[in-house]
Image (cartoon, rainbow, N blue to C red):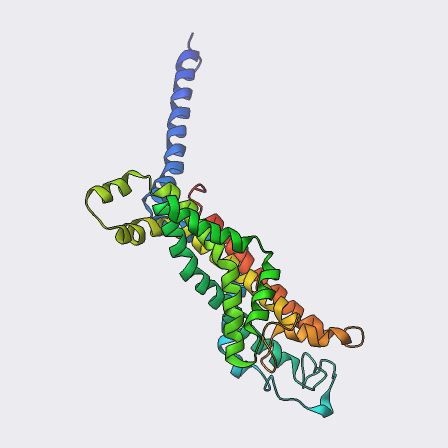
Length: 323
């Protein structure tokens, strides 16, 4: 039966369903277009885009960038030398002349905290890079060749991992004998790197075990490519995501280990400014002068927080399962 406008109820229903279907198709196209655009991007571009959308990752990146700037321009930012003492200005409270006060030797705490940033980042980054250069090749070799090579390498890594991190670092620093200056910093870097080598070796080995069975690796072998080229040109690039994330988070851990060693008197030695050493030297005055321990502790806190936030953001951005 037709209504007053000349259309029957069936015709109206059919027309409504047709319009609804066209609207659904249009909405589906709008949804699919960004997905198609995402698929056309390279994995690196997708990771960067997801990283930029992460508020926590951007906050961590901003903190890390600020730390790098402070460490790079420490000589210009510090109002005084971090090692110059003034016995007439000991235990001064934060003021315009000394924004973070002075310690028991009359040294400006702001200058020591600023220069301590350079020491912390140098030790953190250098120890992680050294662990990478040793641990990654060991993991590649162990995972790719397997059998006795894998057993030998992994048993050594298990031996190192059998020690608690801080205990092994303390033992190594006792063996190395802490010294002041650049040589002392090198010893700290070496001790922390040895502790972290098994972490990268095991991560890379696990990735290699799954990658080496892929069809394109078998094709490379069939084409007669040598093992070093297969390892570094085809397998290693597919292991970079977990390596990058572990490296970022490892820097924060290395900074904590360095501060802990310095607090125990086995890390960076005076007169080199170190957050951990400043905590050790000023903890006895924490009741009367709490700012002496507060500001080095806050510096460690924000540094570790920045690298952890940035590392978590990288993990989420580089995870291929997150689309």
